[in-house]
Image 1 (cartoon, helix red, strand yellow):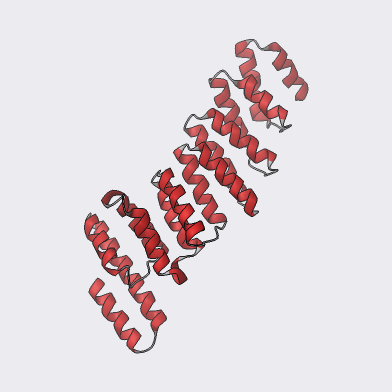
Image 2: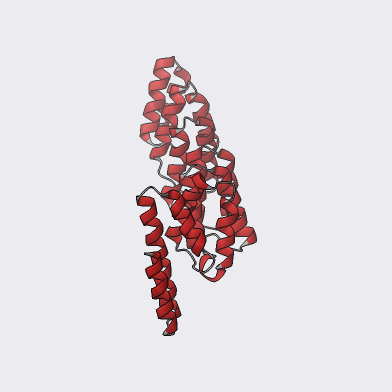
Length: 260
């Protein structure tokens, strides 16, 4: 397949259709790597990419696949190989779409250090300006790996750049920490998001309060939420009232009833 793709590229190039030639070669390379991967020949897939990467720029999907392959076949050289390839074909690969592809792959593989290193090189060295999709990939990667520092650092960068993200993005960041049983990180992210005047689905607060109740920290979490004057949905208040009843916390129960 790869030989056929190279032959097709050469013929198209001879006819002066360089764009179509490049597209044909990129598609052919991706199919070749996919074929190796389907046959569980990861080394063959990496070899095919390395043999062609100097002359053929990868598609974003190819970059995603190659990064996943290099994580197991050559993790020590992964960062250099991926970023050098992107720099070599900067006019086609130094784009937010390609940055998203590699960052999303690193995040899904739960590689937070690689995620940070990639972002630093792509933004600072290659000059790729992150868009909302890139920041979503960063937040998701850090949150699902349980890296609170990474989430907070990315939040600060988003505010500095003035980037707007979908509302749903913020809710699942909180849920990601809750899934990892990281109550403090979930609470800190909730307060950060609210202070930034960003809307998120209030239903996630019910999950936050529920976990706080299970940890015996419902009153503490309630006080932190009240300190920033964040309104609670009725479901969260019901959870708090149940917690008060179970722990005989009558003063807080009275306060909540007045709130209702």
